[in-house]
Image (cartoon, rainbow over all chains, first blue to last red):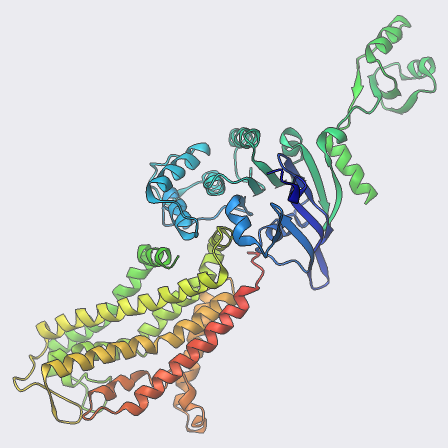
Length: 305
Length: 270
C-alpha cells in the first residue's frame, strides 16, 4: 500500500469543495490520510463530515477540488477504488424483510467482484462473527435493535477485507459495551494493516483510538495533526494547593497562570518541585505534568478559526 | 446484478400481494358471470366480456381487458416508482452504489425487473383466467371461437392471436414502467413517484375523453392500450396495434434516457 504513487497517502483531497446554492457545505478541504492511520474526523453535526465522506465514496459529486482515494481519482476511478474500500455512511441500512446474512449475500452478489457461493457463505459468517452477530440468525432485520443494525452495517463494510475503512459515526446506536467491542475490532484490523478513516462527534472516542485527527468546522478543516503531536507534554506543571499565594511567591516568574486553586508553572521536574514546595511548608494536594486534553485543543482551534 | 434484482423482487411479499390482487379481480368477475349469467350487452363494457359467457376460452383476454385499464398500470407504477426511490428510502441505495454498482447498470436492472414483473403478471393472469374460463364459463363452440368480425377462428389461430395479445399488453406497460422509473430517480419517496406516474396516466385518460385534445390523442400513453382487441378481428386490424407499439417505445426511450441523465450525476445524500 505504500507505493510511491500515493506518497503513502490513502486519502488525499485538494481544495475539495461542495456548495449547495450559497451554502459551502465543504469548503476547500485538504485531507491527508496515510496508510496505517486511524484517522479521526471530528466535527459537530452539520459541519460537513458526512458530505466529505460521501464525496470520497463517489456518492456526492464535488463542486470543485479533487479527491484521491488509494492513489486514484474519485469518483472517476470508483470501479477500481471502491472494491478495496469498506464503508458505513450515516446510519446502517438493510432490506427489512430479509435476515442479516441474506442482506449481506444480496449485497455481495450485486457487485462485479462477487465471491463464489461457498466463499460467500464463509465470508458472511466471518464478517458477522467479527461484529458479534449470529450468522445462523434467520430473523428479518426489521426485528433488529438499532445496535444490531449498526453491527450489520459494519459487517457489510468488513465483508471483502478492505484496505481502507471509511466509517461514519461507527459507534452510533451502540451501548457502551458495544462501543468498546467495536473499538477493539477496529484497532485489531488496523494492527493487521487496515487504514481507518472514521468520523465522529465524540472526542473521547477519537482520543482513545486515533493516531491522527482532523477537525471540521463549518465545512473548513481547521486542524489536522498527529494525535501524538497534539497531546505531547506542554513543558508545564500543574499544581493544586490551598496556599496559592505563598506558592506563587516562592516560585515567582515561572508561574504561567493561577486559576482558583490551580497554578500552571513552567518547570521540567514535578517531583523536584513537589519536594521543594513541601519543604517550604506549602500544602500540595496534587502535582503533575500538564497535558492538554483533545477537547481543549479542539476548542482552542475553533476559537482561532 | 439483474438476477439479484429479480430475486429481490420475487422475495418481496409486496410483489405477491399485487399479484394476488391482479388475479382476484378477474376471478371475482368470472364467478359473478358464472353465477348471474349477466354479461354486458355486446359492444359495451370491457372487451370480450359478453363473449365469454358462451366461450370460456376467451376469458384470458377478458381478464386482461379488466385489469389493463387500471390495476396493471397501478401495479407497474408501484413497482417502477419504488425502484430507485425505495432503495433511497431504506438507505440501501448508497450500499449498492459503493459496492460498487454502476448507476446505469442499476437503472437498467431495475427496468428489466419491472418488465419481468409485467411479463410474470400477464402470464399468471392469463393462465389463471384460462383455467377459470374453462371451469366456470361456457365451453368453446365445437366449430371454433367466433372472432369479433363474425368469422370462426380455429384453435391454433386463437392460440397465436392470444399470444400476440399478451405480448402487446406487456409492451403497453413499457411506457408506464419508464415514466415510473424516471420519477423514481427524482424523489426519495416511492409513493410520490408512484402517484406522479398515476397522475400522468389519469391526465392521459382525461384528455382522451376530450375532443378538444384530439391533436394530442395519438401521443397519449393510454391511447392504444386496448388495441389488442383488434388482433381478434378478421382480418387483423394492425393500424392501432402498430401505433400503440410506436407510442410505447417512444415513451420508453425518452423517459429511460431522462432517468439515466438525472440519476447518472445525482448527489446521493439521503
